[in-house]
Image (cartoon, rainbow, N blue to C red; front, side, top):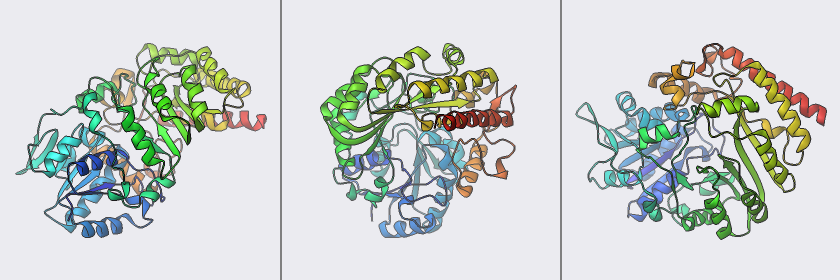
Length: 469
């Protein structure tokens, strides 16, 4: 018998072996293990079997007192509720816990419409420990005597708290199928928490961080703890992803991290929130076997990007010339560049699409070493995540949101689960999504028009690179 069985679920029923799992579960499980709790993580997609069979086998094998389900993003909502129902059928007395952004946002609705007993809201380490030790409940919403009770969020991690958070050295002690979990995909390395920006499409924005986590500032992990995690991960994979760059014009944390790491046989994707400094680029190029940077440009139309930044709809504006200054550096290094964009943002016109296509053509011609057709492939239709600004107040941005309620997201995540869809995608191969495939659109544009704009962009993109080759 163990104290807690952690389940990392897949977004799709027939998920491929090696689908990335929520590595934050390793941090939670490591913390609880260090506190003498007996825990195990099951990454369901690593077994290559029907999820129901794996869950039943592992539940009976470990006989947990609690089952903890990761519910960070909404694409796992249906999977989580379906799994909770199965767990309840296996044992009517076991307590089922869920946590994460989506669980925190829809806490009451989830408890009212599922077999989940407790939602941990906000930071989860100490609240989970207290639950397992049957001590004072903090940061939770709980079902008790047919009532939904919320306790205040009093545990908000500070930077000083993070010194105690590091991974269990032997991951096999807490994570089954460890090698399978890490071998097929790049894995995220946790650098910190929080955000200072209010991008309208992101549920991790500053506004929602305050709402769900009571977090007002960003916090960084101690560099020695990050290096510890990287050393452990490197036993299983040399493909790592970094995604924490909150401070404008300040790369000092990553520079210090990389200098202390030293030269490594690692392939790094660094998802940057702002344009990087020359020092950071030179350092990554020097110490890593391969470096790719991914930058959220939002739109290739410079004038529209400036408009969005001035409205505080996206991160601070950078000009085309500033971007090209960075590309002049990467072009002389072995650094690949990806530029992520969104179609359907408020105020976008066909002229912006045309300007964007023309700029892509210029970039592809001037920076062939840094860029390829893959550089521009991460272009998505606008999508509303639970708790994002466009989800909470779409009318403030001239948008119509068709996916608002818990029931809306549950229905959508069920389609994702049953039909093996990714989100958000330009083309959803499902007649169940014909009416509102993206769930949100500007008042003056239909979702079909957004889809057409995406197709125009990709068709022109293919023409550019076909002609180039």
